Amino acid sequence: MTGVLTLYRTSVGKKVIMALTGFILVGFVVFHMYGNTKMYQGPEAFNAYAVGLRELGYPVFGYEHLLWVARLVLIGAVILHIWSATALTMQSHKSTGANAVSGTRRYGEHKRQTSYAAYTMRFGGIVLLLFIIYHILHLTFGMVGYGPNEFQHPNYLGAHPEYFVYNNVVVGFQKPLISGFYMLAMVFLGMHLYHGVWSMFQTLGLNSVKYTGVLRGLAILVAVAVVIGNLSFPIAVMAGIVGPAV
Amino acid sequence: MKVTLKVWRQKNAKTPGEFKTYPANHVSPDMSFLEMLDVVNQELILKGEEPIAFDHDCREGICGMCSLMINGIAHGKKAVTTCQLHMRSFNDGDTITIEPWRAKPFPILKDLVVDRTSFDRIIQAGGFISASTGSAPDGNSIPVAKPDADKAMDAAACIGCAACVAACPNGSAMLFTAAKVTHLGFLPQGQTERHQRAVNMIAVHDAEGFGNCTNIGECSAVCPKEISLDTISRLNRDIVVAALKGIEPTVETAAAQAS
Image (cartoon, rainbow over all chains, first blue to last red; front, side, top):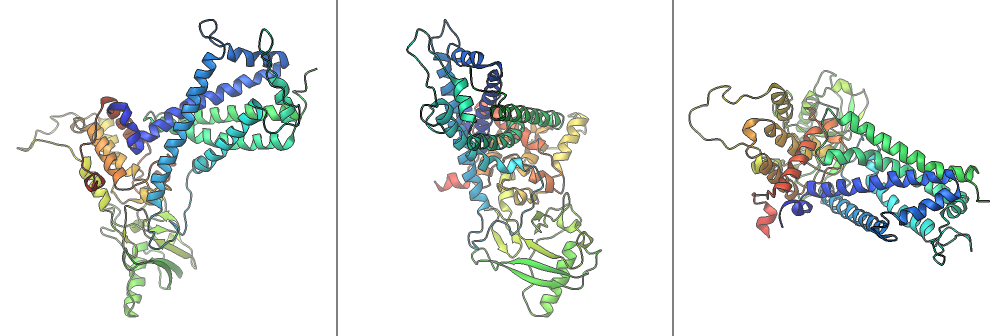
């Protein structure tokens, strides 16, 4: 194997994989947030958006074809993102777990001098993975977080499939514990994005003293936009701004 | 002023170490940190105890020999070496924790002295340019643009003290490696081997057991020469370009030889 396919061997190459898959995932969360703002336009618009996503690329592509391409790319990106993070973390732990002779911690003291967000990437990443699993079981499959008959599964029986995402979001977020968990996860997402978006450029070698301010700004913008957008949904539901369809 | 020292004592690499407490009762605020240790060592010698072993050489901040984690910060303060740190930076009555650099590629030789030979092996992998021997070339026969010369010089300021590794939560030597790659990579003389150099140095960096960069920036924050994180970005770019060109490492690492 030669060329780009050998990237996975070195530490920097694994980081490049992390950055490129991160780029895909950042793109996803931005559009995911933006798409969900359609819930403010009411049940028809939001449910039609769910159908629209599945009819993407019609008539060249069939029902859900492009959606499945996107899903596979995203699943692949998540797997590679986690794989590179795990491999790199293990490499780093080998270096910092030094002086096993003494059995002591690496430093008696360690004073953090830079951003807090950078230190939450690993722990926060695990929290986000658990959140994503819960989120899919919750709003996609309706397997957790709903009482009996509260979750409306899609209806494929008619001429056109029907989706009831609006109802599911409203019913789902009316439970304060679940909304609280979503909002907590968004704090971790914000920190992950703040460090991750800037890191992406640094890792790909596109950062320099000239652009670092702009890239930090971009990272703040992406993190703030996604977090505020996503926080607004459970808040709007609980405050009754986005209420049950009549 | 009087301070209390909590010092890591370790007989050799194989013996477990521990923190021991020593009083330092005759400290002038004008002393450098190393001079303070000298005074404490004199007292230990007079008492017939083993003096504290620590690395030092030029004592003017240019050799990169002194080290020490002081109260959890490499070199004790931002942008200085330990020899440039003065006791006036501390308060009377402080307890000061002193530890060696700790990362797997830096085995402890004794007390606060670690073996930094792994850095030499990274340099050997690519921290040079190949040039024909013979009479000295004419000065300015290869023009170097002033901005490039400045950037190369900023990176070349690295003294290889390894504070970056000590400060790094990942135990990574990426800032050191990047400084060397950037220093030569900005000069016309360094262009021929530019991408091969980056690939080789990273191969040895990884093989030596250093951790990996997560762009936190602790390294740059404590670097006595204030080497910028930009150098790491440049190293990354060289590695990506090298991968696209299909450049493979040409160095034999200790790990590769063993297998």
